[in-house]
Image (tube, rainbow, N blue to C red):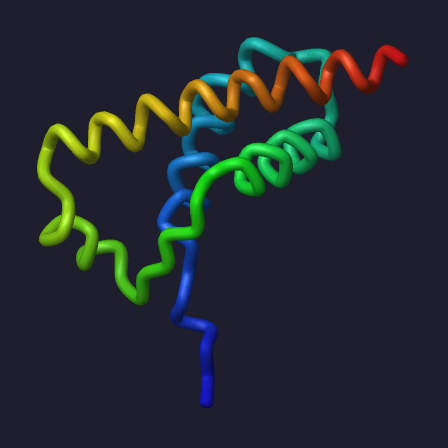
Length: 89
């Protein structure tokens, strides 16, 4: 049985947010920093596994989707601040 088609819905949201927002806000950081931020954030978000991204379109209303995106933004921002602070110690 191949489970490769299963993915955590939050992964794509976290990765996209890091690429679109955090890279410019933390230009001095290397790839390891952003990978650590992604791991830290994903461990603080609930698992929401799907087989196909399109499946979520049918299960989420617009309001719920916006709430999820807001939560991801907050969690990733907190993760970046945490990882940056830890790297200074």
